[in-house]
Length: 119
Image (cartoon, helix red, strand yellow):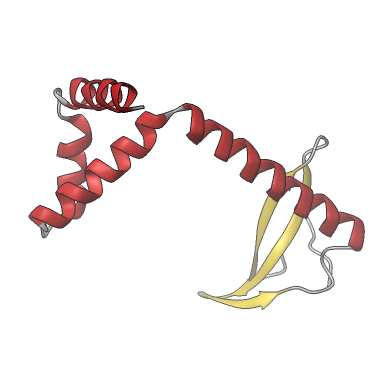
């Protein structure tokens, strides 16, 4: 069954946009509150290839970004380190405080300098 612009009553569909022409492709069929599973007739071979290429290009772009922005890994590893040390009951509140701490930018900056000296 192909996905249409409006799903039949009782059916919802998850969409992904990709490619130069912002193609929309239905990936999953859901009924009620549960996912029924992939709709095998949804993607034709060309669309599958486009989706595969899109995923590869996205992964490459993300990897390049992370390699040029070391502060991202420092932010994430620092957050996890503090979270595991303190083991807060309210993770969302802890994360909000961690990432809005006015001292965080200078901590990250100092870690970047330290890493650069060690290289």
